[in-house]
Image 1 (cartoon, rainbow, N blue to C red):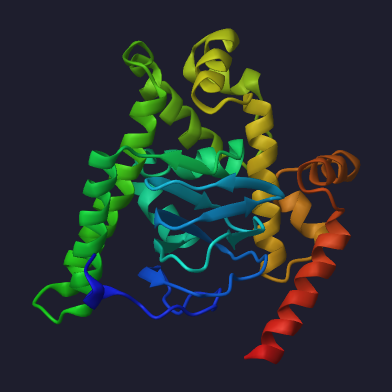
Image 2 (tube, rainbow, N blue to C red):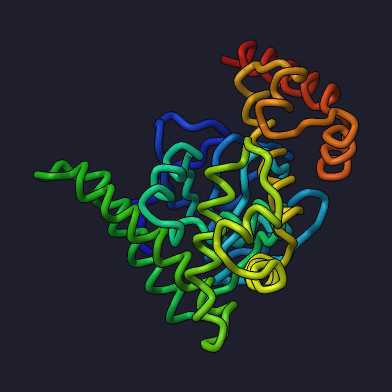
Length: 297
């Protein structure tokens, strides 16, 4: 490994940069960080060590070549089983705003984030050849960040886009046999349309009318790609949007309407089913975390 690019570990769980941060860590005899959440995506590339990752109360034992993707607001922490061997990993943080910028370029940048956020698929494994290629891209990116060369900002942005795109392409192609690729364009267009009309009153009927296709075909293509129905996806996306409003100090009574929900009872039921607590309890947690963060800083 390129030790000159190694970063001294910090338990900090918030970003200093507006868009993204990336680090290479290699530590021994270290204490694990306790359970925490954050408001950005965390790509965690496991290289070596004896470590498990706990994500939303489920434990995954990691092996070299694993990619762990933690969406915003999902509790997680690492368990270091043997602190006498080196714990090596890359950590790549990317803000939701920056992800949205990439998605405006192409939905191909967002497949793996959708799988983690919506379908709760957090662990992806790469073979040695694929993982070595990823490591090479990461090291080149970290090296560019630490250098002071002409066009540095443009080069870094290109490398970040390239890394995110390749991760999405690799995971998508691994999970979709060739015979299903003919439906990829429709699936991507469905995602674009739904996300663009998320706060409006959309339904499977209105979507089918827009695309001039049968409800059965649309439902089949969507579920084959994402593993859930269109209705479930709309609810999950609206709930994520609601949480974003809450992180901006929004009011529950206004926010659930702004997110496309029309009935508080159904909104309350959906929220509690998804997150295990009520909207009021979630707001109280945010207020507590905000006051604690101000105290720490």
